[in-house]
Image (tube, rainbow, N blue to C red; front, top):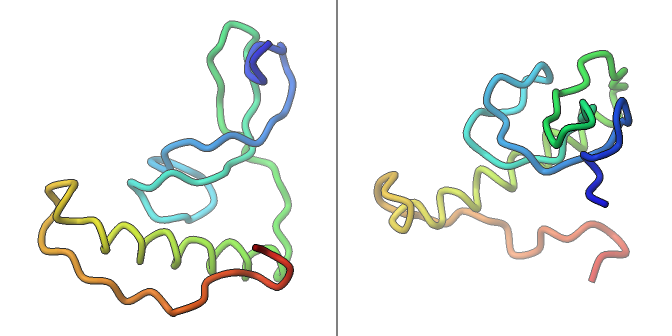
Length: 95
């Protein structure tokens, strides 16, 4: 069973950010809290409390995704690509 098949359940899904209530840049895929309607559709959960630590982590992830998007802009038809990714974007403990 897919996570969005469970009626009224909250899940974290990778979704397009367009229209999100968290201030994350538009037109990227980002992990967002979602609620299922039980029929395979979902809505973004809007009442999640985000503290300063979490906001900092979200902004760091957003910046990395936007940098990756710029790296492939020539493949998506969004202009000339340029990469400004730092050499190491891994968090401590990631492999």
